[in-house]
Image (cartoon, rainbow, N blue to C red; front, side):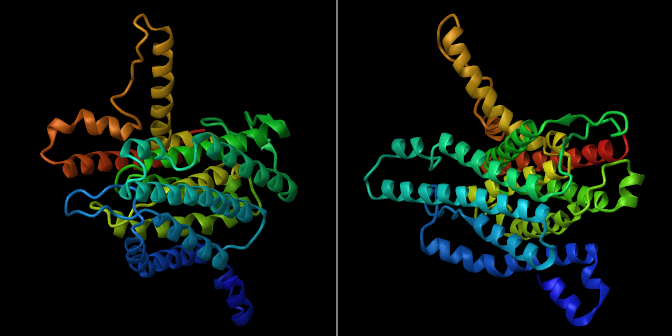
Length: 383
């Protein structure tokens, strides 16, 4: 680890300081993305690594930008975060889920090339647009999160199923789940967070800001809960060692801010499933390890809304098709996920699709920022 090496070399306490290491991780990750992303975009363009079809003279941007983001965060974390069971668990989920998403991205690119070669139709491509099947993805999500949950239980001293309840001090109500239920909760939260981030990644920069806000919240909690005095003052559980998640959170924020330079509308590159699934899963794992999993639906409200819109759309359609009078399925939304619903609902109000998408994106970003403020206010004060 770079910071430990610099400390042993110079004996400057600065290199051991948590705030310095977190700031350095953020700057290092953002610098890597700024420097390497142009080369990565050129490489992907040469490989025609796109999942969309060109529109006239406008060439579709490549996907798989998330692979570079994940690599940058991993490199920054390994340099400036101390490896303990907390940081290793989060990084393992980030790497495992990003691998699942990366395989999905590669299969999308492969299927699109088959369309261009005339081997399959566009209709067949749409049927295979998810790359690997949803069932296989869910199975892999649960498998990896289960393995990491077992690892965390074995190597994190005192890890238990206590839940921090919104609006309630731990001294008043600090419910506890048995080990099997808590492990199941870890799997469910991690999987749900990954799916929510994946559904949100549908418009330029749409998923980046929720990842930033949820990472900021987790980073604040990690820093404060890792200090016994701060934790006592804010009436939150003291989590020794959990503060090593702080540099991972700041590295994620730094990488995402640099990524927005290239992904802001009109996007030069898309994150793809490797990034959205990887970071979504890592955020879910960190929220569980910091005992703030019940705050994820609040701070990550955009993730929740996007995932719920898909669930309600599918469930509602199947229910009305089976039990409705005319046996024809009805949809609750014009299209799911939620941002697509607003694309269809508001399309007559704007002169261009770019203006429409910008309006949706900025409103979702504002919701993410408000959710961060509300979640922070509830967690740190309204108890």
